[in-house]
Length: 494
Ligand code: UDP
Image (cartoon, rainbow, N blue to C red; front, side):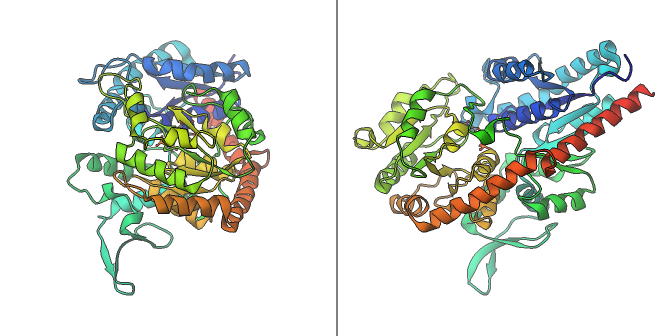
């Protein structure tokens, strides 16, 4: 059988939906090149990913789930092994869990090498937040590649931020305080106070130290980097990361479901908390590009004041909306214990007054399905990279409220592409009713919005071309797969 075996790749994702969604997409994409891919997870997440894996397997793709036993973490309740199932104050428990997974992972790898021979993994693709993946690769003397959930521009800016202390400087010319990021970048970028994440200024915060160390070690010890982006979207920064790291950088995105560009119904991450058929009927009844889809990713939960403020702005805009509201899980129970309370957070009479033009989804929304509907003309978002890339590649402009990490940089990229406007900022921000109304009317009712969508259509075409045969992303996936074949051949030849 020697020579007929397939290269086997293992994928390690940090336990958060914004990580597991793209890394599952990556797993399917790589496996669809004729490779075996094992996606590593824990018992509480199996039910979330099983459907995705079964569908891939039914399509002839060799994608497997590896379920590691959950190591005990003090304070982490059973079955809550994902960031979205915990209040923000408890997120540290997931970092603790992630690092403790190395031991059961190494035990699984050992079995693979004992029992599988040449079918044992040839490469570990690890999430930047699962940095121990490179130590495991070293231990088993195999190759490893790093996947970062941000885009190339975002990562370039994050690396620069992590290597220089972020301080505000007075800019003589305009008399404004600003940050100029220039270290290790192709050219300097200037940010005003409200255009950069506050977390980078808080040097007392112990989690900042962890994050900075993670960022400073990007690409260290790996043989290459993989990004969910496409070369034509941010060419200077994909190239910049190649120059900076001296390693191959594969831009293989958008790594979206196969029928994504054909508007296929697609729910990812979790089961949608809405009747999808009814939602589509509602969307069908709205006029083209008139609806704003409001969603702040998988792990942002608003306070009463923020929900009230956003609701007032949406109401004042007079535009139709779909609003996915997530309520803070308590440490005691992961279920939406506060859904009733959150309903009370809305201004009095809001649901009644907006019932003809608004849909509220309490929980998980079928985001791709919504964004790909022609009635949707804008995304209101925190600018997480997945949502940013999804909106860019579906041609939908973003009105952004970046909160932390790379989100401010993602909005900067959107603005430079002519596809994004900021309306609020930071985790404790309270949006102004007038501002929300103004940006929504600009994007949904003004010629400027049409111009943004026209640019979006061009980007959509570019993205589609990149993933098709002969396109840049397709070529990079194929190059990655051929690298894996080389590794297997080397093993077989001893
Ligand atoms: N998502 C979804 N439904 C929701 C919220 C989010 O399908 O109600 C998906 C979204 O399409 C994206 C991911 O979850 O793929 C969120 O990733 P992102 O980077 O935007 O934000 P994060 O959750 O990491 O902050």
